Length: 206
Image 1 (cartoon, rainbow, N blue to C red):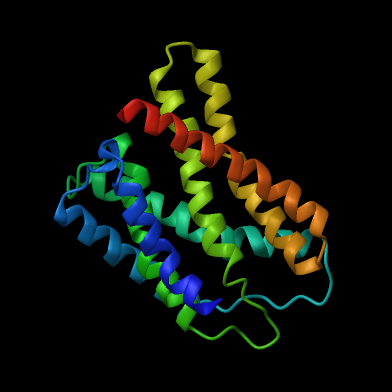
Image 2 (cartoon, helix red, strand yellow):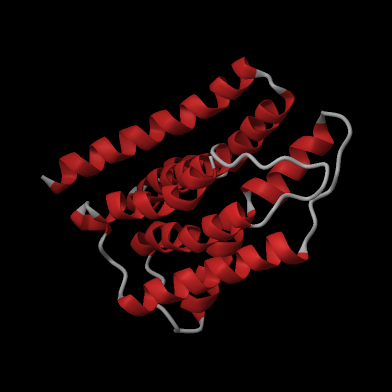
């Protein structure tokens, strides 16, 4: 499991850039992504301790969302937008997902190497999978939100972009609570949209 967590993000990035339309980052942008991912991971796993919970329910879901699922996606997105605003990098919407996926490489490395807090458990396989599928699915809806001219459809796609983190948190909760059916129900939609996204990308690149 540790090896999967160490290598999954890096292997996925290689697969990601195999699609010509995803090769949009310069060497400098890639370096900023890796640096941001490393800094965020060090802050999260070295400085911030995970709350300990004795029972399940809403507190566990909130911990999963705020401490496990959102940080590498939401915080990296914030850094990406900030650097774009400052003119440090080119923050075009097409490069957002590639930048986040590159930031996940050092983030996943530090996540795998730092031991868990006493009384807590790390989902070494589930979390890297959730982070990547969430980014891919959010990109799926983001591209369609940007390209459509209909305001109502754009709002619908924007709302759909907010759903993956909550599905990811529910999947983590189900894994922790050993609710297999709920875990499958949360993971399958993410995986299905990610597969559809790659199939459409493949057809577009042919």
